[in-house]
Length: 288
Ligand SMILES: C[S@@+](CC[C@H](N)C(=O)[O-])C[C@H]1O[C@@H](n2cnc3c(N)ncnc32)[C@H](O)[C@@H]1O
Image (cartoon, rainbow, N blue to C red; front, side, top):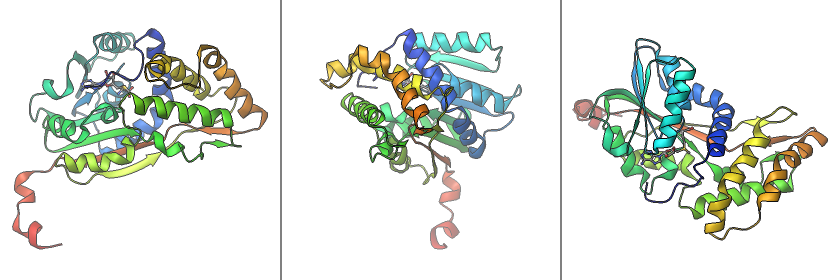
């Protein structure tokens, strides 16, 4: 990843990743199941962060399968190992490394990843490099955020000006830091650029309301995490005080109005890695 990572590497950032993991758990689990992750598979999770997707995949592959999580950040990998140990998950392994460099060719039945391509300067090329780790016919699943999907203000009911400010500010900071806020729908093009078959796509967004939703804290923690990056890129609009009040202010707006907030839409994009001998068959070339 050539640009600096958008978020701050602190314990708070790990908390933010945990909250994100909970909010997107059902969506991610569905995406893994739909893609065909199943008992006994060997799965590679790239940009695994604190291992949320790695552990979800581990549940699905069971004791006869295994999942390797790779992340370039040593501290994050340490936390992923620690969490897996705490939870007694034994069919996972974590390594520190650059995703494109570590995986041996065709060693895995499936490649999965979440919120990874958006941080790659050339997502198609990165995807081509990491896809080589999957055996022919194996599964490739990228779950990517489409942050830009909330910029048309369809993000709250009733409309929240404060949430609109949060959405716009976060999109500006993430984009200024060099990440792609259209990575979700852009995944289709990334697969084609990678030389992979056209993926099947699904878009989903958590919609949250009520006093106990984690979405208020998740949004507030992300703003806090991004403040240093916003400062470096000259994106104003939030400061530490406003960020400290954000969780309560968002919750108040929602509760006072019996309202809801829409969290970042995510796109799951999946395909099977093609087998050269099948695509070269004459009947595939001349018949459709
Ligand atoms: C937004 S986080 C997502 C973490 C995790 N997949 C999840 O959904 O919770 C992106 C992660 O990708 C890692 N990353 C980004 N580019 C990478 C690369 N080229 N090689 C390895 N890790 C990378 C970052 O260190 C970071 O932990």
